[in-house]
Length: 285
Image (cartoon, rainbow, N blue to C red; front, side, top):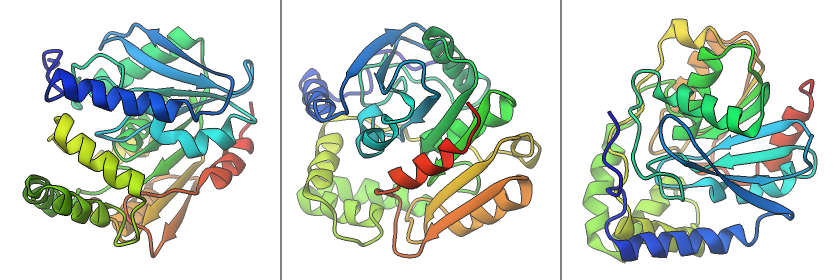
């Protein structure tokens, strides 16, 4: 069952603040840009669209406690050559329905099936980060033949998450700005955190109720069904996920897999847009 709608933001004021930030970031999205609200079995879904109509479609799935505009940097590059579609996942901090679907069962792929059907996409290129990476892995394994190439940025689901991070976040967020800045530093692997990222983290801590359940680790037999080339990006200072263990497991199970591990990066991996574009452009349209 889905959670009741209207529960993911802490208040109406918090919802307005988050969506105001969304709109501000969307104003920087590559032009021309449009948005569509499409119906799915798991709630109305907002999709941000850019790039040439008729170009090969690339679907971008964001992480938890986030929304479609987290792909701003990559969209600026991908929209030159691809039809980019970035949906807000239901129950996350965007314009889609606020009710969350369960991660168990068939809901994740039903939701994406319905989004693709509404957009008229058949075979796609797919990229996902964190929770969106888990969703992308699930979809590629359960819909073999529909995904031409798959890009994963710090995806959940390949190895157990670090339970210690959730505990630390629960302790740090109530400490106000200094606690949130410490949390952001952990997410960035100790690197300098952009001011906008700190302010975003503070905004989410004050305004949004995050998903508390961790995406389940996907079984070997499911991952082994993925039949497309896969590019994996991971940071070896990731405080949330076990990067090396994840990459090693996927390399063992997937026939066409390559990993690019950054020893200095954490859970956030900016600046990969050109490499993603290069990898996806090698896919047949």
